[in-house]
Image (cartoon, rainbow, N blue to C red; front, side):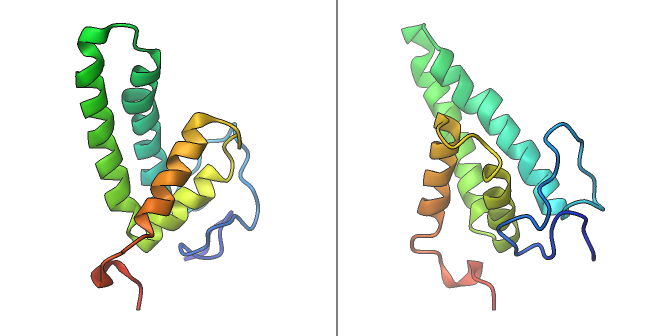
Amino acid sequence: MTYKYVNSPYDVVYKIIPPLDTSLGHQDVPAEELEMREILEQWYFEGLLPVLNNHNQASELRLHRRLKKFNRIVMLLLKNDFYGSAAKRIVSQWPEESLSTRYIRYLIEQSEVNIPAYYTRH
């Protein structure tokens, strides 16, 4: 399939950078990228942001557990070539200095360490 912003689902960079204020569809990027965008949005708003904004020590453990759950989901998807490539493209548009960018890049790096053979592309 041909996409407007990517040549292949395996690409880790865009051929044309999509505008930030535009909703993307299946003709623009692979389906895995659309799904990864939703997952990263949930990871940020429901996982990371509540931990960062928490001022209540009583809820700290619960929020950290929830972030850890989101991290596991993201890590699992990052081990897949399509989702991992999509995440790299998505994060390439995020502000370099942001904590969320550094955090996801760390997860990407960790996902590439000791990848089991059944996750690799042949």
